Length: 263
Picture 1 (spheres, rainbow, N blue to C red):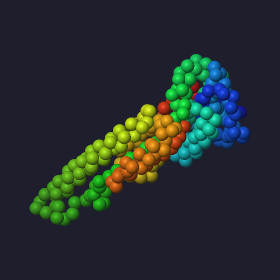
Picture 2 (cartoon, helix red, strand yellow):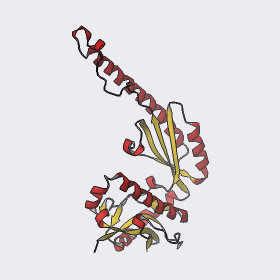
Picture 3 (tube, helix red, strand yellow):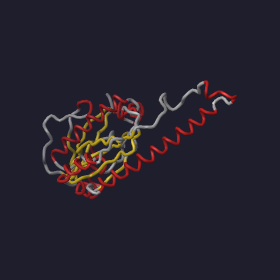
Picture 4 (cartoon, helix red, strand yellow):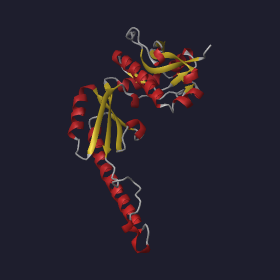
């Protein structure tokens, strides 16, 4: 018999509200609730063959698997968020069983309650800012031509051109980063909190442009339209400003022990 664990999607207040009937999550498994201390955890059963420590070492390198897992996780979190404020937990957070999650809710009830109070009436918006990298026409590395090898100094002109290219790129990066800081400052005036994420892997973003800002902003629901309008007004010809959301507040809740394997 295949060993299984309990996958945790999100935590919310226990209001007695029901999830949509037939809601499923990872691998089509039904989503169930675990209650304790006035809180409810949204959870499901997953095979440890895929979601145990060894399985995750393999699967987290598999982009199609990771994308499918993230979509299923997000679907459950958004369904829970439609019922009321939620604290999403980190992707692939797995516990040994339901009882371990029940103990988690009881031991950290005050902490979770504070988190839920902070995100109530608020949603997360994502803002990414891209700037086109400065490159030589054929890429970063260019083979010296005959004129650059004249005079018995092969490669001298190439090295000078290489230094110039690097200087140009560094200056372009500084300018783009400064402009991204101005965008971030304007958005922070509207948001109640912000978080910075690492620049996205080009394999995931599908683009080679510089990502000079990858920010998450927690915004009151009644200021969401204002936030989106401000992002639109801040777009510039040489920068691409990408807005996503509103989402459940993934970046502003607690990452639980157990992510990346069974706790």
